[in-house]
Length: 239
Image 1 (cartoon, rainbow, N blue to C red):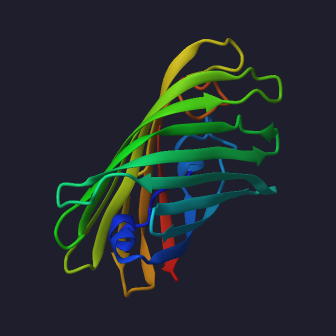
Image 2: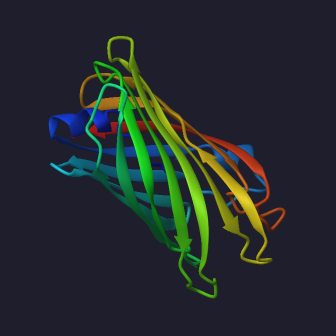
């Protein structure tokens, strides 16, 4: 999954602008973990869009995973933020509302809604941006899964350097989740830092490293109980 890879979301919000991009990632995970991730997707196509308005901003992305059999799954996150403190050089608070959900060949991901607060900040020229979010997370009952409440902590960052030719961005999530087969709770960690070389204002090439623990279903253990590091090779086009 990719999210929050827009590099200057808060800069755009301050200018009342919008942005969108499409990314294509070639995933190397199935080559690194031939047992546990033999069925991992070969490609992920991601479309992202951000739009600011007078009261806050909208952001969403859609991931489409493709493997050797064709389309393997689709996942989306939709976020609305309402800024409720006066923006300042140190940052501003916003109310954060979010929806997570998607489908795969086995059925669907357990849908979740999130509600909480975000602290968004940037430096003077917006070459550095960040967001820290503390969220209540509600998983909804579906496909035999019972509804339950949880939490999520999220950090998002963007850093432009080398006169804008390079960008380091990404996110890190930590949340509590119930195992489908046992009902036991465990902490899930997922981070996806990205490094891009920007050829111009439209085209970029780079890589992403997906760090995860207790997140990916392992075909050799039959559980979500392992740490994985899955790199990609990627291109991106900014509209």
